[in-house]
Image 1 (cartoon, rainbow, N blue to C red):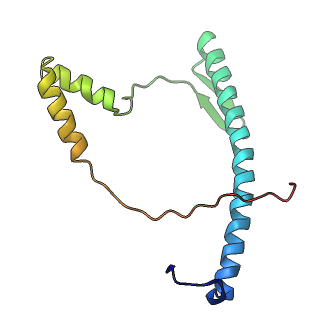
Image 2: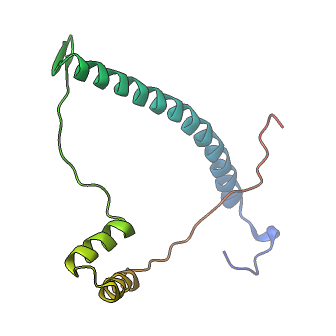
Amino acid sequence: MDDDNTPGELTDEFKNSMKEWVDLKTVLKNARGDIKIMNDREKNLKTYIKGFMKSNKIDQCNLRKGKVSLSTKASKKSLTADTIKKGLAAFFEGDEHRIIAAFDAIQDNREVTERQVLTLSGLKSVEE
């Protein structure tokens, strides 16, 4: 939207879209709160079930509609700045100058992207 637009130039379609977007943001915010509660409960239940199955040496539980299996698999952790520095330190045998230079080269060559962001702030809920 251009900076020289005045409120009188706003179309009904734009106004309706804006109202629908604001209403949808409010509904989604509430739904995300509910989903967070359910995700937290699921996480707690999974922790309990895994602990119980492990301590009782249960690999699998058969259910009416499927089965629950407990297995162990190896996976690599996220690639973080600290992980990269540790890898460079091992590769360059602790040569701090080369470690810093290589890390800076990696950081400087990260692709920069631009995106437009639409934010909503200062919205009062109906209860207030």
